[in-house]
Image (cartoon, rainbow, N blue to C red; front, side):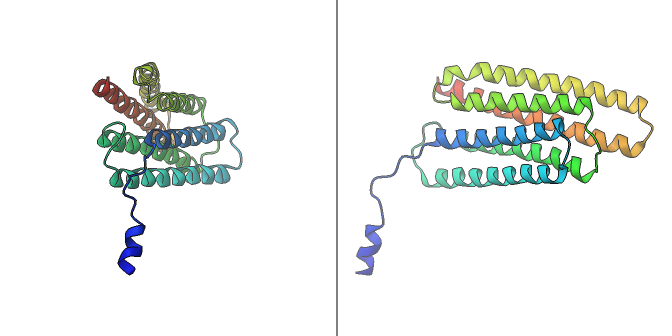
Length: 212
């Protein structure tokens, strides 16, 4: 009898997993994290509370990532190659990790006020996250995703140019070595976040090329 009861729990017809929906959930969470970071920059008050909120969003992102990986391990047939879903999920998680890393540094470094350049860079990260969310929303229609990827690449180049010029100027003008090191770390993390957004775009472009 025990064996019969166990067999009844097994579904002979595999349930369809909507990986596109799960990826949209992940990208929406990335956008929420980027929005929370932008709000921190624009209204730099209650920093610890706002950073904690970003950390909670990052934690939710980890849970979404684990759910996708778990489904991948149990699913034989996927709408696009399973390794592409894995790569895209990982890259989305990396974006959110980078966003959380920026927020934590503002708190841990006891930054009293964000610079105008920091606000500009976070705005670029936020706009890139918006484009990622749009791209993932159109992933089923593969040929409609490329314009979003092009814009993400443009934003990443814009962030690179700002950071390169900014850090060079800081080394020439900033005399406080501790302040220099703190802001160099923060700006570098912002550049990394923009790079991670471009990584997502690159994965999407590879998926499009493979499946068209």
